[in-house]
Amino acid sequence: MNIDRHRVTPVYQYSTLTAAEQVRLAADAISGGDVATFGARHLPEVERRVAARAGRAGAVAVDSGSAALALAVRALGVRAGQEVVIPEVGWVSIGTAAAQAGATVRVAPVDRTLTPSWEQLAPLVGPATGAVVLAHLRGRPAPDIVRIAAELAERQIPLIEDGAQAWGVTVGGRPAGAWGTVAAFSAQTYKMIAVGEGGFLLADDLDLLSFVRAVAGDTRVPTPEAVWRGKQRMTEVSAALALPQLDHLDALTADLRRLQRRLVDRLLTVEGISEIIPRTARDIEDGNGSLTGMWLPTPDTARRLASDYWRAGLRCWWPGPGDLHTAGAWPVQPARSMVEIHSYLDLQTPWLPSEHHDSFADHVAAVTTRTLCEVAV
Image (tube, rainbow, N blue to C red):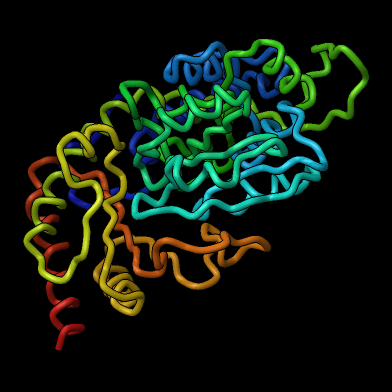
Protein backbone atom coordinates (compact mmCIF):
# COMPACT_ATOMS: atom_id res chain seq x y z
CA MET A 1 0.00 0.00 0.00
CA ASN A 2 1.54 3.27 -1.12
CA ILE A 3 0.70 6.32 1.01
CA ASP A 4 2.41 9.64 0.38
CA ARG A 5 3.87 10.57 3.77
CA HIS A 6 4.74 14.04 2.48
CA ARG A 7 1.20 15.21 1.72
CA VAL A 8 0.26 18.03 4.10
CA THR A 9 -3.43 18.54 3.30
CA PRO A 10 -5.45 17.07 6.17
CA VAL A 11 -7.27 13.92 5.01
CA TYR A 12 -10.74 13.65 6.50
CA GLN A 13 -12.10 11.07 4.05
CA TYR A 14 -9.93 8.20 5.23
CA SER A 15 -11.01 5.90 2.40
CA THR A 16 -8.99 7.99 -0.05
CA LEU A 17 -5.77 6.79 1.58
CA THR A 18 -6.24 3.38 -0.06
CA ALA A 19 -7.90 4.60 -3.26
CA ALA A 20 -5.37 3.10 -5.66
CA GLU A 21 -5.82 -0.45 -4.35
CA GLN A 22 -9.59 -0.02 -4.20
CA VAL A 23 -9.62 1.04 -7.85
CA ARG A 24 -7.51 -1.97 -8.83
CA LEU A 25 -9.74 -4.51 -7.08
CA ALA A 26 -12.96 -2.90 -8.26
CA ALA A 27 -11.70 -2.65 -11.83
CA ASP A 28 -10.72 -6.32 -11.83
CA ALA A 29 -14.18 -7.29 -10.64
CA ILE A 30 -15.92 -5.08 -13.19
CA SER A 31 -13.75 -5.99 -16.16
CA GLY A 32 -14.09 -9.69 -15.33
CA GLY A 33 -17.85 -9.42 -15.00
CA ASP A 34 -17.65 -10.66 -11.39
CA VAL A 35 -20.25 -8.28 -9.98
CA ALA A 36 -22.93 -10.76 -8.89
CA THR A 37 -23.47 -11.65 -5.24
CA PHE A 38 -23.56 -15.35 -6.11
CA GLY A 39 -20.12 -16.69 -6.89
CA ALA A 40 -18.47 -13.54 -5.56
CA ARG A 41 -14.84 -13.62 -4.40
CA HIS A 42 -14.49 -10.39 -2.44
CA LEU A 43 -17.82 -10.62 -0.61
CA PRO A 44 -17.11 -13.83 1.35
CA GLU A 45 -13.58 -12.63 2.04
CA VAL A 46 -14.72 -9.32 3.53
CA GLU A 47 -17.33 -11.14 5.63
CA ARG A 48 -14.71 -13.55 6.94
CA ARG A 49 -12.29 -10.79 7.84
CA VAL A 50 -14.85 -8.52 9.51
CA ALA A 51 -16.06 -11.44 11.64
CA ALA A 52 -12.49 -12.40 12.52
CA ARG A 53 -11.62 -8.86 13.66
CA ALA A 54 -14.42 -9.00 16.22
CA GLY A 55 -13.84 -12.64 17.12
CA ARG A 56 -17.30 -13.65 15.87
CA ALA A 57 -18.35 -16.87 14.17
CA GLY A 58 -19.57 -15.09 11.06
CA ALA A 59 -20.78 -11.94 9.36
CA VAL A 60 -23.25 -11.08 6.62
CA ALA A 61 -22.43 -8.09 4.42
CA VAL A 62 -25.49 -5.96 3.65
CA ASP A 63 -26.25 -2.71 1.86
CA SER A 64 -26.24 -0.41 4.92
CA GLY A 65 -25.76 -0.26 8.66
CA SER A 66 -29.47 0.51 8.95
CA ALA A 67 -30.27 -2.73 7.12
CA ALA A 68 -28.00 -4.62 9.52
CA LEU A 69 -29.95 -3.22 12.49
CA ALA A 70 -33.32 -4.05 10.92
CA LEU A 71 -32.17 -7.59 10.10
CA ALA A 72 -30.87 -8.01 13.65
CA VAL A 73 -34.25 -7.06 15.10
CA ARG A 74 -36.03 -9.44 12.71
CA ALA A 75 -33.63 -12.33 13.28
CA LEU A 76 -34.04 -12.01 17.06
CA GLY A 77 -37.81 -12.40 16.65
CA VAL A 78 -38.75 -9.00 18.07
CA ARG A 79 -42.47 -8.48 17.51
CA ALA A 80 -45.51 -6.38 18.35
CA GLY A 81 -46.25 -6.34 22.06
CA GLN A 82 -42.57 -6.26 22.95
CA GLU A 83 -40.32 -3.31 23.78
CA VAL A 84 -36.87 -2.38 22.48
CA VAL A 85 -34.71 -0.11 24.62
CA ILE A 86 -32.43 2.23 22.67
CA PRO A 87 -30.00 4.99 23.71
CA GLU A 88 -30.87 8.69 23.60
CA VAL A 89 -28.01 9.35 21.17
CA GLY A 90 -27.47 7.28 18.02
CA TRP A 91 -28.68 7.28 14.44
CA VAL A 92 -32.47 7.42 14.04
CA SER A 93 -32.58 4.06 12.24
CA ILE A 94 -31.93 2.30 15.55
CA GLY A 95 -35.45 3.19 16.63
CA THR A 96 -36.80 2.70 13.12
CA ALA A 97 -35.69 -0.94 13.12
CA ALA A 98 -37.64 -1.59 16.32
CA ALA A 99 -40.73 0.38 15.29
CA GLN A 100 -40.95 -1.37 11.92
CA ALA A 101 -41.05 -4.70 13.75
CA GLY A 102 -44.09 -3.45 15.64
CA ALA A 103 -42.27 -3.09 18.94
CA THR A 104 -42.62 -0.19 21.34
CA VAL A 105 -39.48 1.95 21.50
CA ARG A 106 -38.22 3.05 24.90
CA VAL A 107 -35.34 5.53 25.14
CA ALA A 108 -32.65 5.39 27.82
CA PRO A 109 -30.96 8.66 28.83
CA VAL A 110 -27.21 8.98 28.27
CA ASP A 111 -24.52 10.47 30.46
CA ARG A 112 -21.46 12.45 29.37
CA THR A 113 -20.02 9.42 27.58
CA LEU A 114 -23.02 9.76 25.19
CA THR A 115 -24.08 6.22 26.19
CA PRO A 116 -26.29 4.86 28.99
CA SER A 117 -24.86 2.81 31.84
CA TRP A 118 -26.70 -0.14 33.36
CA GLU A 119 -28.19 2.25 35.93
CA GLN A 120 -29.99 4.10 33.13
CA LEU A 121 -31.07 0.94 31.32
CA ALA A 122 -32.23 -1.14 34.27
CA PRO A 123 -35.49 0.79 34.99
CA LEU A 124 -36.55 0.27 31.36
CA VAL A 125 -35.83 -3.46 31.20
CA GLY A 126 -38.60 -5.89 32.10
CA PRO A 127 -40.70 -8.85 30.97
CA ALA A 128 -41.77 -7.06 27.77
CA THR A 129 -38.21 -6.25 26.66
CA GLY A 130 -37.44 -7.98 23.35
CA ALA A 131 -33.98 -6.47 22.92
CA VAL A 132 -31.67 -3.69 24.09
CA VAL A 133 -29.52 -1.66 21.69
CA LEU A 134 -26.26 -0.14 22.86
CA ALA A 135 -24.17 2.05 20.56
CA HIS A 136 -20.44 2.76 20.63
CA LEU A 137 -20.40 6.41 19.61
CA ARG A 138 -17.93 8.89 18.16
CA GLY A 139 -15.04 6.43 17.81
CA ARG A 140 -15.16 5.49 21.50
CA PRO A 141 -16.43 2.42 23.37
CA ALA A 142 -19.61 2.32 25.40
CA PRO A 143 -17.80 2.07 28.76
CA ASP A 144 -20.39 0.00 30.65
CA ILE A 145 -20.97 -2.63 27.96
CA VAL A 146 -19.27 -5.44 29.91
CA ARG A 147 -21.72 -5.10 32.78
CA ILE A 148 -24.68 -4.45 30.48
CA ALA A 149 -23.95 -7.57 28.43
CA ALA A 150 -23.71 -9.68 31.60
CA GLU A 151 -26.92 -8.26 33.11
CA LEU A 152 -28.88 -8.86 29.90
CA ALA A 153 -27.48 -12.36 29.45
CA GLU A 154 -28.61 -13.23 32.98
CA ARG A 155 -32.12 -12.08 32.02
CA GLN A 156 -31.94 -13.81 28.60
CA ILE A 157 -32.52 -10.51 26.81
CA PRO A 158 -30.67 -10.06 23.50
CA LEU A 159 -28.17 -7.22 23.17
CA ILE A 160 -27.79 -5.55 19.78
CA GLU A 161 -24.40 -3.87 19.68
CA ASP A 162 -24.28 -0.90 17.29
CA GLY A 163 -20.67 -0.51 16.12
CA ALA A 164 -21.36 1.81 13.19
CA GLN A 165 -18.81 4.34 14.46
CA ALA A 166 -16.59 1.81 16.22
CA TRP A 167 -14.19 0.33 13.64
CA GLY A 168 -10.93 -0.26 15.51
CA VAL A 169 -12.45 0.33 18.96
CA THR A 170 -11.85 -2.01 21.91
CA VAL A 171 -13.56 -2.33 25.28
CA GLY A 172 -12.92 -4.70 28.15
CA GLY A 173 -9.96 -6.14 26.25
CA ARG A 174 -12.15 -7.22 23.32
CA PRO A 175 -13.06 -5.51 20.04
CA ALA A 176 -16.28 -3.57 19.69
CA GLY A 177 -18.72 -5.98 18.11
CA ALA A 178 -17.67 -8.88 20.35
CA TRP A 179 -20.21 -8.29 23.13
CA GLY A 180 -23.70 -8.30 21.65
CA THR A 181 -25.94 -11.22 20.78
CA VAL A 182 -25.77 -9.52 17.40
CA ALA A 183 -23.54 -6.64 16.28
CA ALA A 184 -24.08 -4.19 13.43
CA PHE A 185 -21.42 -2.14 11.65
CA SER A 186 -21.70 0.53 8.96
CA ALA A 187 -19.53 1.21 5.92
CA GLN A 188 -21.33 4.41 4.95
CA THR A 189 -19.34 7.26 3.39
CA TYR A 190 -18.33 8.93 6.65
CA LYS A 191 -17.29 5.81 8.55
CA MET A 192 -13.75 4.49 9.09
CA ILE A 193 -14.45 1.83 6.46
CA ALA A 194 -16.35 3.63 3.71
CA VAL A 195 -17.82 2.15 0.53
CA GLY A 196 -20.59 4.71 0.02
CA GLU A 197 -23.30 2.56 1.57
CA GLY A 198 -22.79 -0.78 3.25
CA GLY A 199 -22.99 -2.63 6.52
CA PHE A 200 -22.33 -5.88 8.36
CA LEU A 201 -24.26 -8.04 10.78
CA LEU A 202 -22.08 -10.17 13.09
CA ALA A 203 -23.05 -13.02 15.40
CA ASP A 204 -21.97 -16.39 16.79
CA ASP A 205 -25.30 -18.15 16.26
CA LEU A 206 -24.91 -19.93 12.93
CA ASP A 207 -28.65 -20.50 12.55
CA LEU A 208 -29.29 -16.79 13.06
CA LEU A 209 -26.61 -15.91 10.49
CA SER A 210 -28.12 -18.38 8.02
CA PHE A 211 -31.57 -16.83 8.49
CA VAL A 212 -30.18 -13.33 7.93
CA ARG A 213 -28.35 -14.46 4.81
CA ALA A 214 -31.58 -15.97 3.48
CA VAL A 215 -33.94 -13.06 4.14
CA ALA A 216 -31.33 -10.53 2.96
CA GLY A 217 -31.38 -12.06 -0.51
CA ASP A 218 -29.46 -15.33 -0.78
CA THR A 219 -32.04 -17.59 -2.43
CA ARG A 220 -29.73 -20.59 -2.10
CA VAL A 221 -30.14 -20.62 1.69
CA PRO A 222 -33.19 -22.53 2.95
CA THR A 223 -35.27 -21.54 5.98
CA PRO A 224 -37.19 -23.90 8.30
CA GLU A 225 -40.45 -22.41 7.05
CA ALA A 226 -41.50 -20.06 4.26
CA VAL A 227 -40.63 -16.42 5.04
CA TRP A 228 -40.75 -13.11 3.21
CA ARG A 229 -37.36 -12.31 1.71
CA GLY A 230 -35.83 -9.15 0.31
CA LYS A 231 -32.63 -7.82 -1.24
CA GLN A 232 -30.28 -6.19 1.21
CA ARG A 233 -26.92 -7.71 0.31
CA MET A 234 -23.69 -5.78 -0.24
CA THR A 235 -22.41 -5.78 -3.82
CA GLU A 236 -19.17 -7.44 -4.92
CA VAL A 237 -17.76 -4.05 -5.96
CA SER A 238 -18.48 -2.57 -2.52
CA ALA A 239 -16.75 -5.55 -0.91
CA ALA A 240 -13.73 -4.89 -3.13
CA LEU A 241 -13.63 -1.30 -1.87
CA ALA A 242 -13.74 -2.44 1.76
CA LEU A 243 -10.86 -4.94 1.65
CA PRO A 244 -7.93 -2.48 1.25
CA GLN A 245 -9.42 -0.31 3.97
CA LEU A 246 -9.53 -3.28 6.34
CA ASP A 247 -5.86 -3.92 5.50
CA HIS A 248 -5.06 -0.33 6.46
CA LEU A 249 -7.34 0.03 9.49
CA ASP A 250 -4.78 -0.75 12.20
CA ALA A 251 -2.20 1.63 10.72
CA LEU A 252 -4.86 4.33 10.31
CA THR A 253 -6.10 4.09 13.89
CA ALA A 254 -2.52 4.17 15.19
CA ASP A 255 -1.85 7.37 13.22
CA LEU A 256 -5.11 8.98 14.35
CA ARG A 257 -4.45 8.14 17.99
CA ARG A 258 -1.02 9.74 17.83
CA LEU A 259 -2.50 12.99 16.56
CA GLN A 260 -5.40 12.75 19.00
CA ARG A 261 -2.92 12.62 21.90
CA ARG A 262 -1.43 15.91 20.68
CA LEU A 263 -4.90 17.44 20.37
CA VAL A 264 -5.97 16.35 23.84
CA ASP A 265 -2.74 17.61 25.40
CA ARG A 266 -3.12 21.02 23.75
CA LEU A 267 -6.84 21.34 24.47
CA LEU A 268 -6.26 20.59 28.14
CA THR A 269 -4.38 23.91 28.30
CA VAL A 270 -7.38 25.86 26.97
CA GLU A 271 -9.62 27.50 29.55
CA GLY A 272 -13.38 27.28 29.09
CA ILE A 273 -13.78 23.59 28.14
CA SER A 274 -15.78 21.73 30.80
CA GLU A 275 -14.56 18.25 29.85
CA ILE A 276 -12.50 16.58 27.12
CA ILE A 277 -13.15 13.01 25.94
CA PRO A 278 -11.00 10.92 25.71
CA ARG A 279 -8.60 12.13 28.34
CA THR A 280 -6.38 9.31 29.61
CA ALA A 281 -3.87 7.30 27.61
CA ARG A 282 -6.02 4.19 28.18
CA ASP A 283 -9.11 5.97 26.85
CA ILE A 284 -7.22 6.98 23.72
CA GLU A 285 -5.94 3.45 23.11
CA ASP A 286 -9.43 1.98 23.44
CA GLY A 287 -10.87 4.39 20.89
CA ASN A 288 -10.05 4.65 17.19
CA GLY A 289 -8.72 8.21 17.42
CA SER A 290 -11.16 9.67 14.93
CA LEU A 291 -13.02 12.15 17.16
CA THR A 292 -12.21 14.22 20.22
CA GLY A 293 -15.23 15.25 22.28
CA MET A 294 -15.71 18.40 24.29
CA TRP A 295 -18.38 19.48 26.73
CA LEU A 296 -18.79 23.25 26.72
CA PRO A 297 -20.46 25.45 29.36
CA THR A 298 -23.53 26.23 27.23
CA PRO A 299 -25.17 25.16 23.97
CA ASP A 300 -24.47 28.58 22.51
CA THR A 301 -20.75 28.21 23.25
CA ALA A 302 -20.73 24.81 21.52
CA ARG A 303 -22.61 26.21 18.52
CA ARG A 304 -20.26 29.18 18.24
CA LEU A 305 -17.13 27.00 18.48
CA ALA A 306 -18.48 24.58 15.87
CA SER A 307 -19.07 27.46 13.48
CA ASP A 308 -15.56 28.82 14.03
CA TYR A 309 -14.02 25.38 13.54
CA TRP A 310 -15.70 24.99 10.15
CA ARG A 311 -14.60 28.47 9.10
CA ALA A 312 -11.03 27.51 10.05
CA GLY A 313 -11.20 24.36 7.89
CA LEU A 314 -11.65 22.00 10.84
CA ARG A 315 -14.36 19.33 10.66
CA CYS A 316 -16.59 18.86 13.67
CA TRP A 317 -20.01 17.71 14.81
CA TRP A 318 -22.39 19.71 16.96
CA PRO A 319 -25.68 17.93 17.76
CA GLY A 320 -27.88 20.97 17.42
CA PRO A 321 -31.69 21.04 17.42
CA GLY A 322 -33.17 18.65 14.85
CA ASP A 323 -30.07 16.48 14.54
CA LEU A 324 -31.29 12.94 13.78
CA HIS A 325 -28.59 11.45 16.01
CA THR A 326 -30.50 12.76 19.04
CA ALA A 327 -33.83 11.73 20.59
CA GLY A 328 -35.11 15.29 20.41
CA ALA A 329 -35.67 14.69 16.68
CA TRP A 330 -37.37 11.29 17.13
CA PRO A 331 -41.00 10.37 17.84
CA VAL A 332 -39.98 9.07 21.31
CA GLN A 333 -37.78 10.70 23.96
CA PRO A 334 -36.49 9.59 27.36
CA ALA A 335 -38.61 10.38 30.42
CA ARG A 336 -35.81 12.73 31.45
CA SER A 337 -32.38 13.63 30.16
CA MET A 338 -29.21 13.65 32.23
CA VAL A 339 -27.15 15.97 30.02
CA GLU A 340 -27.71 18.99 27.79
CA ILE A 341 -26.64 17.33 24.55
CA HIS A 342 -26.48 20.68 22.72
CA SER A 343 -23.48 21.58 24.91
CA TYR A 344 -21.45 18.79 23.32
CA LEU A 345 -19.11 19.14 20.35
CA ASP A 346 -16.52 16.89 18.80
CA LEU A 347 -13.66 17.52 16.43
CA GLN A 348 -12.65 15.05 13.73
CA THR A 349 -9.03 13.94 13.61
CA PRO A 350 -7.63 14.12 10.07
CA TRP A 351 -4.88 11.86 8.81
CA LEU A 352 -1.62 13.81 8.58
CA PRO A 353 2.04 12.79 8.45
CA SER A 354 3.43 12.73 11.99
CA GLU A 355 5.76 15.68 11.38
CA HIS A 356 2.66 17.91 10.99
CA HIS A 357 0.87 16.75 14.15
CA ASP A 358 2.20 19.48 16.44
CA SER A 359 1.39 22.33 14.06
CA PHE A 360 -2.13 21.00 13.53
CA ALA A 361 -2.70 20.68 17.29
CA ASP A 362 -1.44 24.23 17.77
CA HIS A 363 -3.85 25.47 15.09
CA VAL A 364 -6.80 23.76 16.80
CA ALA A 365 -5.79 25.16 20.19
CA ALA A 366 -5.46 28.67 18.76
CA VAL A 367 -8.92 28.61 17.17
CA THR A 368 -10.45 27.15 20.33
CA THR A 369 -8.76 29.68 22.62
CA ARG A 370 -9.78 32.64 20.46
CA THR A 371 -13.43 31.59 20.35
CA LEU A 372 -13.74 30.79 24.04
CA CYS A 373 -12.06 34.08 24.99
CA GLU A 374 -14.50 35.99 22.78
CA VAL A 375 -17.47 34.16 24.31
CA ALA A 376 -16.24 34.91 27.82
CA VAL A 377 -15.98 38.66 27.16
